Image (cartoon, rainbow, N blue to C red; front, side, top):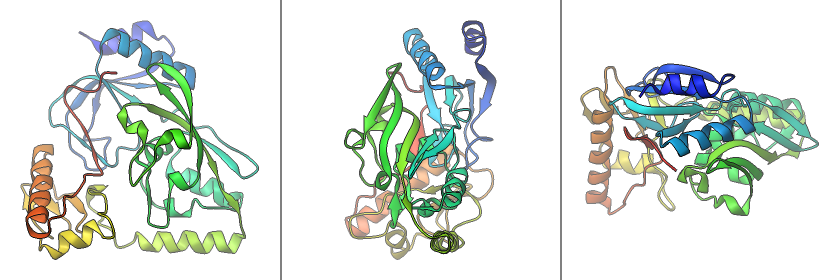
Length: 300
C-alpha cells in the first residue's frame, strides 16, 4: 500500500512528505522512517485527515518538535501527522491563542512583547505548543496547566474544545496522551512590568545553561514525589552508564544522550537498566516522561 500516494490522491491541497525520517526530525536523532508525513493547514483539514486515516485503518501518530519521544528503529508503515502549519498566534487582552505548531520560543517572545508574565518558565524548552500541552511541559516554577483555559482538539476525527477541567492535567500528563490531537490552546497570562518579564526570562535561560548539549530527548523520567529523578539517579551512581552509543549524561543524570550512533534499542535498554537499578537501590519506581513511537503506530 502506497500511503503517500493515497494521501496525495484524496487530499489535493494537503502537504505530504514521503519517507519521513524520525532520526532527522527528533532531538535524540534515532529511528527509522515513516511511509509519509502529513502537514494539515487548519483545524478542519486536521480533522478530515485524522478521520480519513482512522476510517481506512492507516496507523498514525502525532509529532511536534520531536523532543520527549523515542521512535523505534524499525520503519513505520503509517503516517506522521505534524502541526507546524497550525501556527496562528494572537491575543485578546491577556488571553493568548497559540496554534499547536507555534514553538516555545515564538510563544515566549510574543508574550514578552505584550508584557505578559507566566510564560517565562518555557524559555529554552524545545517544544511546540501542541506537544507542550499534551505533555504538560514546564519546570517546577510553572507548567502549561497553570496557564491553560481551554484547548482546541481533534478527537476521533471531530473538532472538540476541552475546558481546563477536561484536560485532567497532572505532573507531565494530560488526557491528550490517549491519542487526542491538540491543535490549539488558549493561555491566560498576567500583565507585568517589562523589567520583571526580562529578569524572569534571563533566570530561566540561565537555569538551562547547565543542561547537556548532546542530542537527547530532554528529561527521561518524571520527578518522584518530593524528589528529583536526576538526583536520585546520580545518587545511585549511574552517571556515565552506557549501552552502546547511549549514555546517562554526566551533566544531568535525568538525560540520556546519543553519544554517536546510538540506536533506539540501546536507549530503551539503558532506560530499563536505570529504572531497575534505582528500584533495587531506593525502592523508587521511576515513571517515564518520554513517549515511544511504536512500529505499529496508533489507531483510534
